[in-house]
Length: 448
Image 1 (cartoon, rainbow, N blue to C red):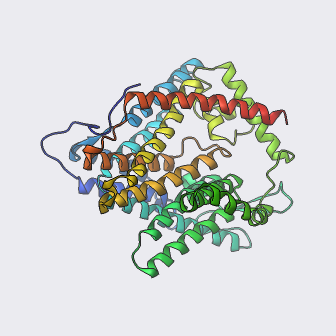
Image 2: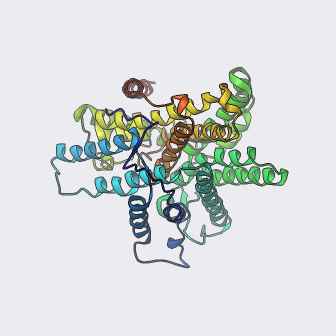
Image 3: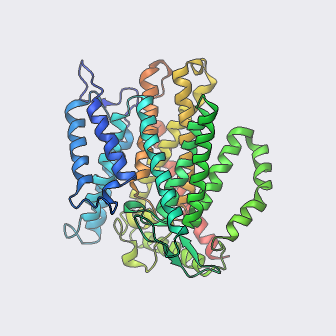
């Protein structure tokens, strides 16, 4: 593992610097296209690959105009994961026959991560991207309302699909593009609830606070309309995190206990989540099959996006999916990537105990880090029940966490926040321990 310090994490630096304002504008356009997806609305129905074109132009602007260019250990991990995915194809004897899934990792994950990491050089820029994300969430939720309200389940951009395997016919709202699945849409909304609360907390005017609280409520309704059980778990994790941050461990446990009746009422309108549920049993079986895949090809796995080629049902667990598809090596890289996000945010959050926390600029970065941490908790909790290991919006959020860390490191070099090789190795070991823990959990559940 290459230990790249965050404090001096740049390449191609020169004596001059450039904020690349036009490049950031292009990044905003790209963000809107990825999350809001207006080019896919029926009223526009753009036929040429607009998203790919904007990505290429934005990357070109990044190369020629941004100085210095940020690069951290997570960028290195993403590159290593690319080679791990390629080796998975070689191990499966596919070689160069079908590298579409592997190449897609570059276009949908590596390049966007590098762009967001590089262009988010200020707190203001990060707020703009977060605002676009919330606008996308409100549009998705409004579209979900139209779908649920329509007697035919029709929205202005997509048609709802009805689920027939529960005691009630549960309508699952969805959006378009990468959100054309209730689980994807639900996960994205879960990750944005803390962002709406962040805007509310940091607003000075009472009416703005009410507006952002209303936005959070809209997102909650959107999650309910998706009917995604994994997203429901993510909401509970987010709420518990808020309880913990606000009231501490003991009070948060008490409040969580008092919330149980309300949770039961909400869950009763979803499909049941239990071992006796046929769908739940199918998920456990898929998890167990993931273990068998790991044991059969432990080092490199069966290949990115190949789980369904060897089992009739998706794993419904992002951790199991990576374990089976990329093997031990790929899983440890992927998990290390996530854990490093957590470590970097915790280091920024812990600065609130120092004298520097009195600085308004640092104070708002600490506040942002806290809510981004809750967003990642929401992602991880939801990801344990749905297979969304490679979704682009997670890597956008991951880039924002890294950008926050790098900004603080550069503005306050005396704090010495750089990640040492020892820290990276420790995180790598923790990822291995998580793999062992995942294995034991699945075996335990299968024997219940």
